[in-house]
Length: 140
Image (cartoon, rainbow, N blue to C red; front, side, top):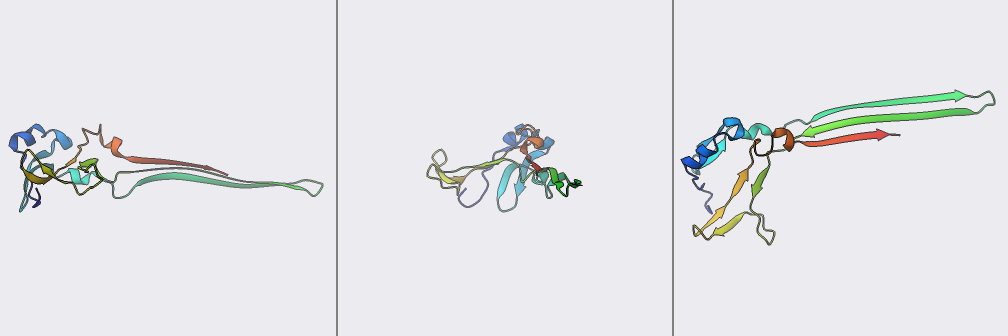
């Protein structure tokens, strides 16, 4: 809510979500904030170090002809891949005017509220789908 107290989703709601986050979602409690559905392991999904693999190759070739001319070539090849995961996919409310603070007047409760949500690996189709991947190929 506006005072940053959690809106208790209730035990039944959290029980229905218990299979999310590899079975680690439960009705959690945070002192001074209240109850929420969450997982202690979901915070660890992001990567600290990105996975980087790559190879570079370089060759310098030359050939001297009998007439004093010379042929040469410098060739460089590279192939690199990188993958990382900043965080799980999440959602927060944005007003139509572009305000991303997330607070809104919920007409159903009469309260100023802030809604946010993290998607579990199961909802994303696995953590692999949340990875940011990049491939770089070079040739000169």
